[in-house]
Amino acid sequence: MDISLSELSEVKGIGKKTIQRIRKYKLADEGYISKYDESLHLDRNSVNKGDCLELMNGIPDNSIDLIITDPPYGIDYQFNNNKNIKFDVLKNDNKPFNLTEYLNQFKRIIKNKKGIYIFTRFDIYPKWYKEINSFFKIKNCIVWNKTGRLGAGDLKGQYGLNHEFIIYATNGRHILNEKREKDVWKHQRTPKGEYCGHPTQKPTKLISKIIKKSSEEGDVILDPFAGGGSTGIAAQNTNRDYILIEKEQKYIDIIKDRLRGGDTNAKNSNNR
Image (cartoon, rainbow, N blue to C red; front, side, top):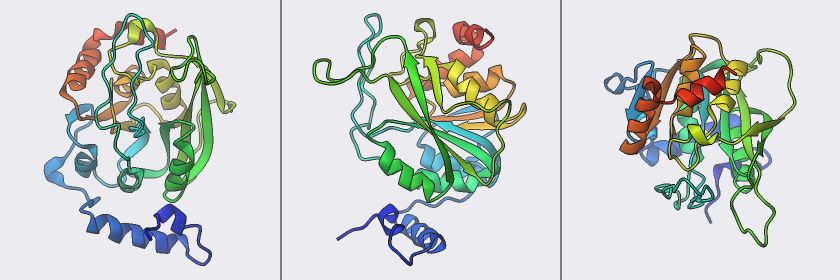
């Protein structure tokens, strides 16, 4: 019977270093090598098309100041609750998602004493908590309390899904900027005028808040699942550099348009 690494880590007598060695060999056997490849080098302030698991090998070791990302949840997500916008089904979101492969890359490229923010759902959180905690120190599960319309789901048999989790973890002791805040953030969903067409687009103002709390001007922010590009917009608006990776060309084009200034709504809302 197969046993996952997260389950193995709970077995008495098996330490963290042993788990890390097993993980390294397992990922190598499956063809996932986390190692800097200069031929794939990703520049600062770049939007890159492709599989982030491969393209992150173009990022040098210990070179990223902050990771903010919203990976696929593997739940075949589709949202059409907005009467004015018809979203596409997310590609490949109906397949199991192995976060561990990506965390292996995150561990290599992020600097010491820096932060990582990963968006997730209530039903994915238990599994991802175990996986993330085997690489990094989880400090909070931030609850994003979404104001505005009720979330999608079973309209007759389920309470409206009006929150999302953000797992905040660190690589060593990371000091947050500004005053201490609570871990429940009341923040509106992406404003209508800011929507670019991506079904899980995050509000630029929310991403800007994370960036200001966990980075400094001139730092490099990575989002390997860039989607509609809100991380890049927020980084640009707060004088940080960014590296974005996205698989789909239609969203690459949207991101580049937003970064050129086509997303004036997001920039104005960030400055309010």
